[in-house]
Length: 522
Image (cartoon, rainbow, N blue to C red):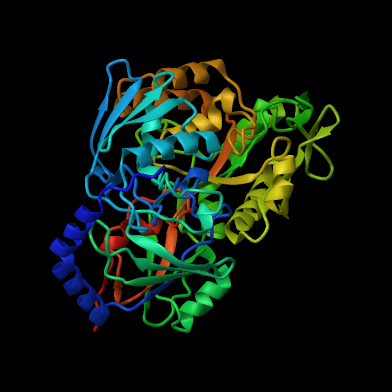
């Protein structure tokens, strides 16, 4: 049963800060409008952190134990202290006092323990497989015990929003209760979400008392900006130069990458499911594609220049491969295929042993960026004698073929766990993890060593070393294309400060610094 203590303390706290809150409210009402944003789609499973909401950025409604500032440096949020035991199996966390959910109930260690235990049971997108149990020691102290050292477990401290143990239920995702900077007012699914500022929030108060998130398509979002109906819209690169009057474009650097999965094995059956591809199973094909794809042209054509070449899923990050690069060399790529026995046929497509170098290249229909990348990449692969056929479809359709055919996927995270999820053999075929069914014992061993490191920074060299095996100088298990720039068209009166280097776009990463946004016009 939910604890009930704390009401008097809450009343005292409200009295202490009442004058300041009133002043902030007046200032906001005078200077800042109700914001309307069109910056992304809505989560399929609602705003439930236990099912993945917030795993790629800011949960908005809920608090997390830690957070990252604009420079990605760690800051406290709910946690005021963390300690990892010498055997790296136990985290002991001290919590901030005087925090309340928006339903008025206090947030304490019971809620944190409940959230972690439930999130593990929910088997969502978070790295909680190694959690043995979470236990509240006292109202301000929680202990998390792991069944083995697992350093990327700490990423959950930044991304798992804490939910109330007393009221969490099956419909939570559509009626979230949290202790974050905003609370839900209404959600008209498929149309809009309205949130209001949580004036009981312990952190910096937002300038904006109300924000509406519109779930428009890309063209409709731009039209809304042109009509002055929104103050910010996220646009694909193809629309980045269509800046409405009174707006400016802001390109934000990201680790949000797009790449083509290359099924690693020859066709076979695993647990009754067919996996593998006769063409991409050939290492010469995978190597030639990475050498012979002109990424600079790809970015110019498909992204209008709003991106950078990608060679791995963690380019430029400490856990990425420092030497995981390959120069564009079309003649060398063709010579490689010639030497491997892939001969050019009368139709310009190579073949070997009766197998044409041809495959479907899937992308989610309605995603113009991935469609442009798929179509442009297919055109750039033709000089290699490789026929990729762009094929748009629903995610349901893609899930049925993603272990046999190449797919344009998107990833990008602030955690090295992303590498584990893509390349470790134990994640093969788990949800969207390791869709290529890649397996290499050397990579698995390096990742195991990294997870056992004494700290996250100490693990970086091992993650990085693995890139020489799975990457473009090794197994070439993916054809990474580009790191996207996230492009926002922003009203000239809205100052969003310094955004973070953004992860993959799910979860509206631009809102990570929302409480720092300011309205600069009268």
